[in-house]
Image (cartoon, rainbow over all chains, first blue to last red; front, side, top):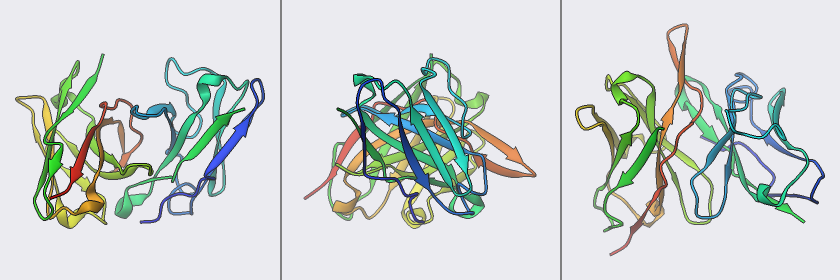
Length: 111
Length: 126
């Protein structure tokens, strides 16, 4: 069961936008619209930021948005703020055999 | 407010069985949803372990399936994880989470993980 591919790091200055990619295959990201994104600050549990590719849970700022094209999903953080500095993980449903797969994580640095 | 709390030994010897319990408050496990376990080795990414429904149906990570058992106790509003024959590679922070799901043409789809416990570090060492 291979993890989804994310860049190890991403960065941006306050106020800028940054996009984090999550690449899978037609058996996971490309085959289903069940992609979610999680934010994790050091020593804390992951927090759901985006589900079903582009939906935001209540309480998540609209600066966070999600999209998908083919086998690659993306998380965009607009108007970067210092508190956005964290690790971000993508997740996808991966079919009835593998079921669930996570990305390796991206460390977002706010410069 | 849904809350989850992991509990169990923080130190397990190699070859023994790791046992953890997740206690859910603010929501009855019997009311629905799947409930899952995810782990994170120190400094590494998330790894899904498995999920369970209150009716006892389970789905496991194929790479861990031979060593994992997840069970549910609706009377205590808890679900549990057992991982056998542990090695140092099983050292990780273990999280429990709630899993909204869908049923599409009779197939269960684990949609996302919306509520998480704070996590508990389990170290495998003699």
